[in-house]
Amino acid sequence: MTTVPVLRLEGIRKSFHGNVVLDGIDLDLAEHEVVALIGPSGSGKSTLLKTINLLEPIDDGRILLRDADISDPRVNVDRVRGRFGVVFQHLNLFPHLSVLDNVTLAARKVHGMPRAEAEERGMRLLERIGLGDKAREHPDRLSGGQQQRVAIVRAVATSPEVLLLDEITSALDPMLVGEVLELVRELAAEGATILMATHEMAFARDVAHRVLFLDGGVIVEQGPPEQLFGAPREARTREFLSRFAAG
Ligand code: ADP
Ligand code: MG
Image 1 (cartoon, rainbow, N blue to C red):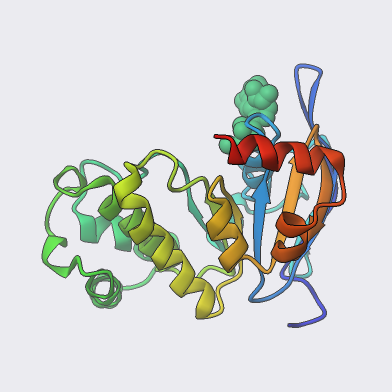
Image 2 (spheres, rainbow, N blue to C red; image 1 turned 90 degrees about the vertical axis):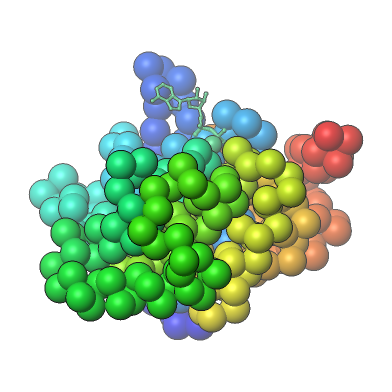
């Protein structure tokens, strides 16, 4: 791991109409690090991920991507977003585009990659996830699990510096969760730098290098998964995890 973090959050604050959602979040994400964000619904996980990708402006603090302050209002938003790969909870593909066009669009439009090169790369990614034969189909011909796997390879098609994953399996039929998590596991093993909000505790325990428990707008506790899940220090963490285990 490098000493300079890929991503650094300093004192991030964000309110919606006086409702404080992020109350001073500090976080360093090292190259190749996989960090899981856990916490109750409404604890600000999605908002935090959106502030990083400049989808939500912050009220205070700084966001550094390598050495660039991307929270500077003068920043080129499209260029910054092009450095992240993002997958959200809900099925994200453009319904009117073919699977291959979904995968290649950002490479072509944002990164200016020639179509032939983008398609060759896109086909390799689709073949890797066993969906090469679906390249010309529209997304509605795919299962939810297949669609989320396409969304993930679309997110990595531009070789992003950081992958931001927001509850990417929570809209899926439980039968389809495994194949999606398996792809994330592979990307993590290949050295992707990942910040992921998740409700999949077993997965977080298995794949994340570090787990952050977010509640009330602050990081209540963080640590390696075996410590955070196995021996949580804070009462709020214990309470959350027990509630979770109870379903
Ligand atoms: P989580 O992803 O952890 O479930 P969110 O980040 O989605 O939490 O939401 C955190 C809080 O911020 C919630 O109270 C939610 O209602 C509120 N919130 C999120 N987005 C908005 C918005 N665009 N406008 C107003 N309130 C919002
Ligand atoms: Mg959320």
